[in-house]
Image (cartoon, rainbow, N blue to C red; front, side, top):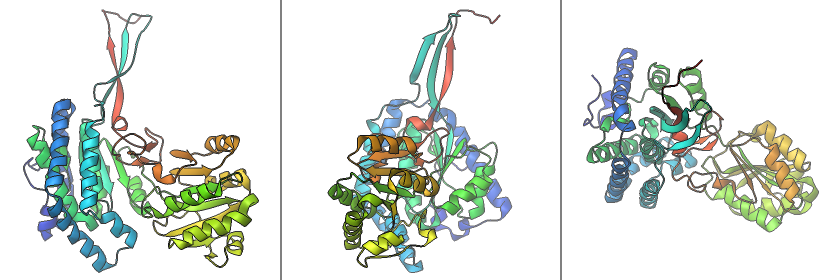
Length: 442
């Protein structure tokens, strides 16, 4: 039978036997979970804006009320991560302390201010036949989110998916199991308080890796899946999926300092892009410097990064000009997502050299240029294929909140159907609604 709407999802934590299962048990569990979510789809699609806003208000209220207890639960995940020697970047992504929980509650509140996309008419016209043709936004259905380390995604993804009238299946990583379970129970409580189906939010009761394969390959099942995590996770989902996949792929983000750049601005942008939060996908991983200004720019920029604890791995031209502050880069350092205080630096042959390097090593995520030359800026924007291209701004701005979308469900690095941060509208589809007066086709 499908899991009851009132059944707690914390069994993944409290019941050790729930952490693994046979193939038959896992298959039955996935089937029941998807059936329960599917049963909730019509109610969510027809939910009123008032109901959805009540859910958002209650979610923000519960996060604020339970800030201390949620932070304490998160400490269990942090302690385990420290015990097993998780990388410091992952530990940072795992952390849900009081300031981050307050920010999470605020992000939920901000989604309240966004227009409800469901039912919106995006286009309308009268055809020569007299038919009135409209395009209307509708929910996608059941969205699967498979993610690692970041428990805040549990809330960000759920509130966006649900406000857009969808149901959501959340499969977080084992490293955040305590935090994720507590947040899912909170979300289901807020749904019930708002007169909405608790089964609109589902999370598996098993942490087996093969469950992910079953979840993305069961048909009928999810309407779309969004994997967020490392390359191995996304590749595994792509291999197994029999449903559409929107990739939130790795962020190999570059900042190119062009010959005309203001070096003080370049220093400020490079330091911010690399060090403000090095463990996130829109952090700079490679600094490119125009050969025309390398003598002045390399020591200044490498020195600024080194002073803030960044290990600089440079090409031979960078190492030669760094005053001993850069170590020699290997071929594997270019095109690599460090997610840490490590940065590759390369001197390139002008704008075309930067474009060639990014075309070879970029991940279609975020690319930026520092320049005072408008023609160079235009050529860079036109020559780059990335979900966000910035001129004289930090790569850290490729974020749904910074770009006016509110909380984001991910940053798509594929082009069907979204490219870049995915907010509410990206979690809907457009359908045609046609009004006639008895017309027949001849």
